[in-house]
Length: 165
Image 1 (cartoon, rainbow, N blue to C red):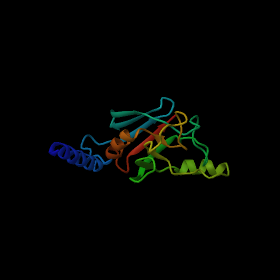
Image 2: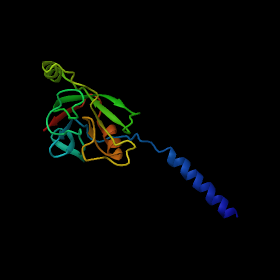
Image 3: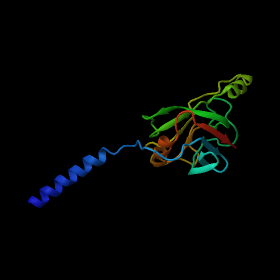
Image 4: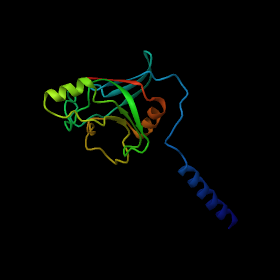
């Protein structure tokens, strides 16, 4: 009987401790100086100078071909940006925002008489059980939740983000 109670107590303690596990990691390696996204290859790289520190398979906007032009087009933008914000309470687990739209993006949308949109993030999958297809975001770059925990720790605000075709 004592063994059963001890086992039950141990199980409850282990469960309580695992609930304290955090999605926030720490990172003390080389500084990430740039994030490169290659849309056609569905890859994202974290670089220190010219050296790739990590690479990830990614999902993009639901209409992945071409550059984002206007709000709601389902495309992931192409261009050069910076990480300008973080969302620890994202519905997609964790997210880091990029400063889309830049002046070029705004001018392109204005020439079309449209709004360029915004809220472009690199984020996790959140609590999605399954994705309807490989590219499922509204224009963001998505990776797994575990990978996003790593990226969130490694990529500080101000980091350059280059998104290529």
